[in-house]
Image 1 (spheres, one colour):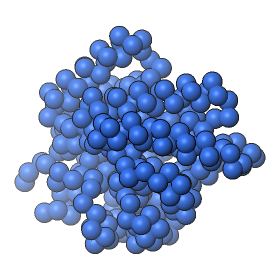
Image 2 (cartoon, rainbow, N blue to C red):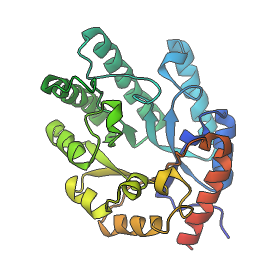
Image 3 (cartoon, rainbow, N blue to C red):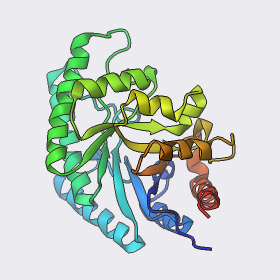
Image 4 (cartoon, rainbow, N blue to C red):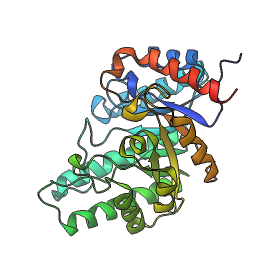
Length: 279
């Protein structure tokens, strides 16, 4: 039986955040994946880790590693809110300008790696300071980054995150609202199947709310576990995605607590699950 996974499936490198990049890419290749969503965070790749010269050398090294392992970076996903609180909506102009430059530089990185899609979080606000002007700054910043991404042929995806992060998009309604305010053809949403399972929501509800403007689908079982290990619903959810006419990438994103301790094992089990669905 072929060890390869269908080409429209990718795997996020996020579970390997405490492993070397060499181990990460070798493990992913051996699990049978050919395409990745690259989580850009330290120690693999982070804006704060390098001088400009070191950054270029790191980019070239990463690209050479991808080539040597026969892997393609379809999605570039720089960490922004979780580990590194970059805030393109900050009311502090100095902070906002710095964060904007970081994200604009990440667009250059995405283009360098040949990624089709890049993750963009819309900044955040203090939970007790929910103000219209905060959202206005977020929208303005997203539009500026989107314009540069458009020139590079890159689609930006935005994903609903937990409301505790202060994000402006924390469910399907607020994500749809943010996308509508930005109104850029290359800024679209992401549907996260693990979140839908945990929240009792449907794929159809999300595609309808986002008006089919979906750039990416993340999938895992409820709680970010290996598909099929918590529920029997993941395959049905992926089928529902197909019925929506979605032709884009589907990214395995394992996120359960301490998944980094067994990253290669859970990615391998997920790959085996995928093969059974596509035999």
